[in-house]
Length: 172
Image (tube, rainbow, N blue to C red; front, top):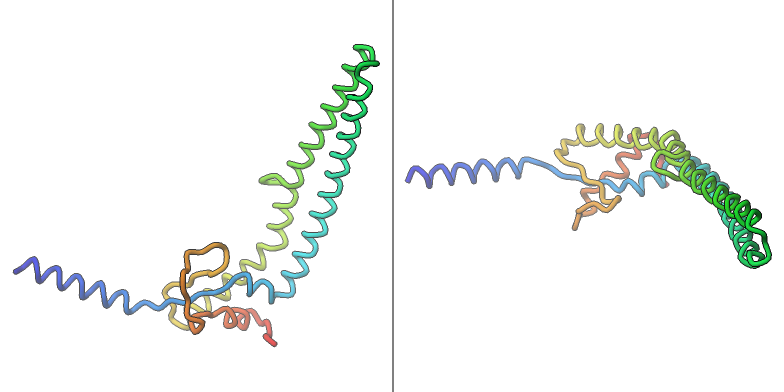
């Protein structure tokens, strides 16, 4: 009997705890698309990435041409010239791969520039979301973007526009 009472009491408390919590969600992709600074930062990043990609593609094209020429002429070349050309091609490949890593690697130029341009915007969004959540009494706020596990959300629980409003961004 005592155990049943404890189980019932526990279930009652757990149920009231869950009912006392309120949930909301945001769509950070939607919010960022409506932040003018984000559009500008994304354009800058895209231009830089395009330029770096073009540079790398040109280098890889040069390497391919050198390899093709080497393969065509290999039979006619003396051993010393073969070795020299192979070393030049290998050196160019190594430099190009290093440049690719420098530009697009884990801590490369693109990552650093993205942190510099985008992170402050993400921080502003987080700060505004936190203010809205606290003022409206939300216990949890989920982000429906970024592959979240949010399966269903009532549109009424979407506070994305409130976050934009908190950031001082007008909605048309």
